[in-house]
Image 1 (cartoon, rainbow, N blue to C red):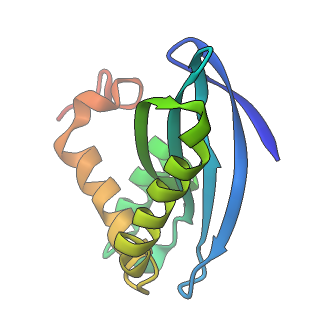
Image 2 (image 1 turned 180 degrees about the vertical axis):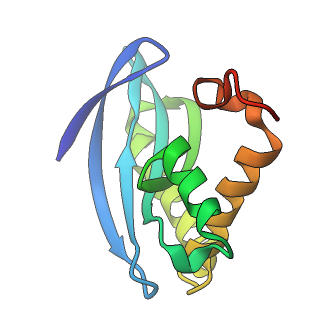
Length: 144
């Protein structure tokens, strides 16, 4: 599957490379966002996305869940990006695979844990509480 997206006002075609089901019920999407930057050079970019549906069991109070839903929506996304600029075109596939292998080795064990979705949802709640300036469309005109 390919998806066209805008990244810093540049249209990029992302290619879904792999979907990895995790033991905690989540699914990892592995995207290739690599772009050619010269005739013989590519910026290799790996994008990992995991959709986490918000559940009341993740929060101690219902109003915490409601706040996150109002600010971010009914689901949140974990994203991880890794890039390597100025890669020779002959090596771009190998470099992408190297980035993906490192992600799988270093991050998948944590992301697969049953506690990950709850911890991620709570981290979003605390980010909203501590960094209201990041969410001006929601907090404008509301007391701190």
